[in-house]
Length: 228
Image 1 (cartoon, helix red, strand yellow):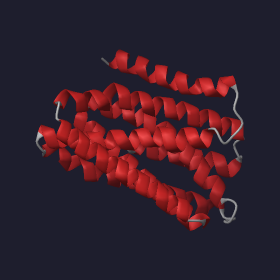
Image 2 (image 1 turned 120 degrees about the horizontal axis):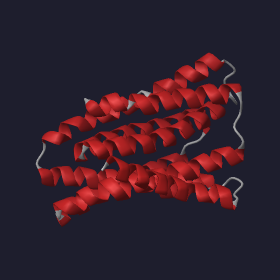
Image 3 (image 1 turned 120 degrees about the vertical axis):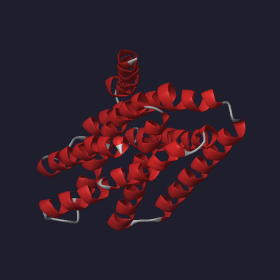
């Protein structure tokens, strides 16, 4: 249940992002900077904590099976998002992303407490951006600020649900756990390369904004060393 408790931190971040967005629309430059920062942090968490756990098990079959399933699922979701349109489709896509984020966070705590804490930091930045984005999108069709916040928070609550689903994995044999972690690794890499950075580069870009990726990456590595 530790993972479920930690999901309350990113859930609170979604609320803060939503409250900020209903009161003041963030600039494209700010959103792009936050996307770069979140991408760097998530990438560092995947490389520093999840990847070593997968490699330590040294099970090619488990790594391939979990990774292949993760890749297939994430690319399938991308295909569905490409066919969908309108606010309902957008909410559905975000809801699935949030649920998978919760699942991956739960898997990170299976890998170890430090891995879970670092990924909590990473996903908090990511979902903060999602809170801003969803609220801004809903604001174009829904006039009630309270309703927008309620809808956004309803989606955010899928985080602890995803983490709860992953919790029983800790009782599985180490090889099976490695397969699940490989799945989570693919989901995180997809999040960085196909969502955060792709969307960030659709907005105005400057050297300073691009540097936020590396600031996020180095920042999380420093936190990881401090916690060691």
